[in-house]
Length: 154
Image 1 (tube, rainbow, N blue to C red):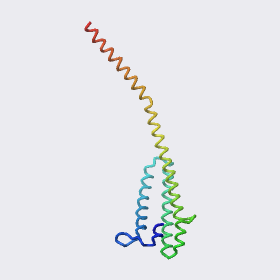
Image 2: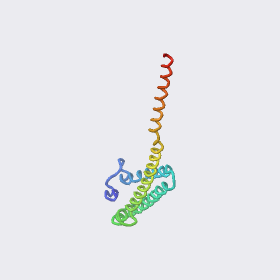
Image 3: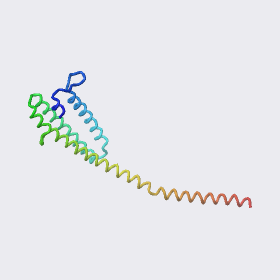
């Protein structure tokens, strides 16, 4: 979007390329790497599916971006703008698809984390009762031991 708005007015420090296009390219590479990492970290198909969906949508987004850039480079600003912010087949629509897929993945992983935390809490549920029983047992043993020593002196 910013590349279209700026129309080449914002360049990189060396003046060789559009700054917004350079930032987009860098951001897309980082996004791709993070999606690959997320797919590796997902521990089941329910977690991997929305990440894979996001990756497919990113690829579609990049294709649509290339087409919009080509349209703009040919001098059709209005056509390029439609490909960026249009209601159908636009890069904006691709962004929404990526966002939706990542929200699904996040919700799934949050559910997995919550379930694991609840399981951990359940495993420690008997800990207070066990600690109390051990404390009582230790007190009884101490009293019996002291009584035995006292009986030796009587």
